[in-house]
Image 1 (cartoon, helix red, strand yellow):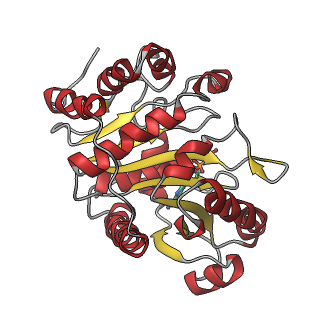
Image 2: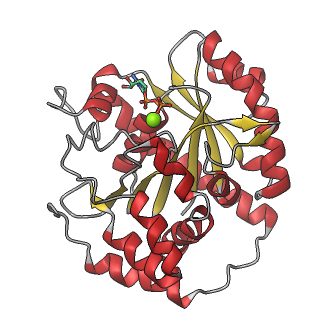
Length: 292
Ligand SMILES: Nc1ncnc2c1ncn2[C@@H]1O[C@H](COP(=O)(O)OP(=O)(O)OP(=O)(O)O)[C@@H](O)[C@H]1O
Ligand SMILES: [Mg+2]
């Protein structure tokens, strides 16, 4: 299953879409909140249940101890998003000042996410926040660049508004160049359209010269609940417009990632027994319920 990173130019719906995709996938799924500007799910739909003792920041210290410590810490810092424990959250940073500590952790973290996707069949969605460039390159602190380089798909989330397209347009070429030079290829880049504004998918694809891999409807009720928590809107569930389309989107991404794999004939990743231990730990933690 693919590791899919979501980015935007500015507050287009990365976190909400990543959450909708994680909650609606047909497969076990993980939302890794890796936005260097800080996570919002903790204070949103999780309504403060996840304490600061859990999450991404703690993985930086574990990584300094070694790969095995990181794999163990990763499994124990995931939070269940459903009762069955099939959908998990790696809660994000609680303070943007923590981002600098993660710089050297991203590559090892990316390895773990790929083990989860390839060996345990997880759909992995990474909230990678806003794209920040420095001299045309991905900023090393303000973006989790290694996660983008190694992702099977990098989705630029855009709305069909003139403002959103204008902001995204400047980022597409440098992002594509970065993925070609340091990542798995420029064709990893696709668009996820939030249907807000007048532009349709074909117009967005034409304007940004990149394929629209999926579209999500404007669904203020479901999106508001996913972003802010509180009481779910009437009729909330997998049949809500946002979650229903998100499920279709996960299938589109899976198909797009498979096509890339076949075309590129990637060599199989070497087995890493230390990392594979993370899978055993995850199945031990499979039951949902509160942790603390
Ligand atoms: N499909 C949608 N329908 C309606 N509203 C949406 C949709 N997706 C996102 N929103 C709303 O747009 C706002 C921004 O969404 P979100 O926080 O997910 O964006 P973001 O890209 O993660 O922003 P940031 O870069 O600030 O982290 C939120 O109020 C959210 O509820
Ligand atoms: Mg966000």
